[in-house]
Length: 377
Image (cartoon, rainbow, N blue to C red; front, side, top):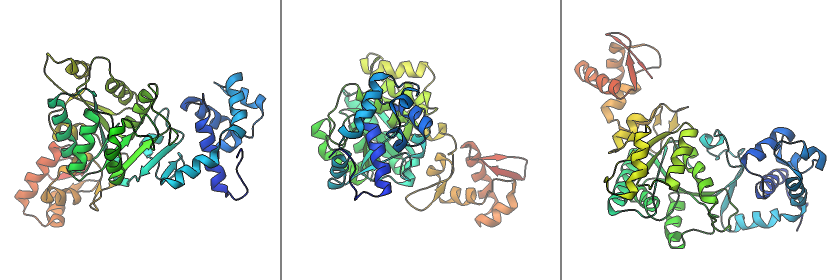
């Protein structure tokens, strides 16, 4: 089947154009953005003449031919039928579930295929990545950090690879938290194959994502590309064991370019897989020994985010607050608030409120304006 049939609705036509554009060989993120800026929509790209296509930066003669051929050679109907059959959801940047943070990076995916579901609370995501050849120490640390962050309310993002990635996913799952896996293959072609059961668990407690066609095989070049998605979804990335040249360091570089926080776990000085982490630390990455190290470094969120337990947070550090600290923080406005007002609103004795304000100030959630006024950051 070469074109969309008459039974398809307008949204189907739009989605089909996104799929066709994403599946056209040679159309990477930058070229796709240039095409959309030139023509305004994916449908208009495939309605353009060859001369109009050639006017787009990055579109040469060969790519122009591919775009013209894609109108008839890419079987979009069959691909979307595969998605429906296997409960795979295609996410375009216009889809409400498409991660906001990912939409704002320099080179966002034009299409994500998803098994499972994304949650609004996934805004609070941290990536944990590292070597496939992990030591017992690295596996233990990755699982412990993932579990601690998941219990605090974070979603753990990784790449489903052997070693550190798998330990991070399992740590989140064992803590009954959420986790997202971003693949370098299609979501229906799990790699490595022995992680098929793990991928199913991830889909049941989060989502498995890929910008490749659902049945795409893993290729060496797709893994560095997927790393930008792992970091793009996340507030920060923690590197646990990495050699001097590794995919984990590529992730760290993507994170820096995207304005994300970079963390590294130190290791034994005589271990090859410590060298990459130690280099990151020399370059300014934050040393991580505990969940608190991560929470202290992450800044305020772009907008308030609902958590799975019904709370709303403005800063990741709020996830670690106890009931008393939460009551006091909730009593403080984003405009000057007097301590007397806080005492009344929180229904707590003044000494407890004063002690709690010191804790909140130390965690950079509030700022004292005077001896009697504070403001929420």
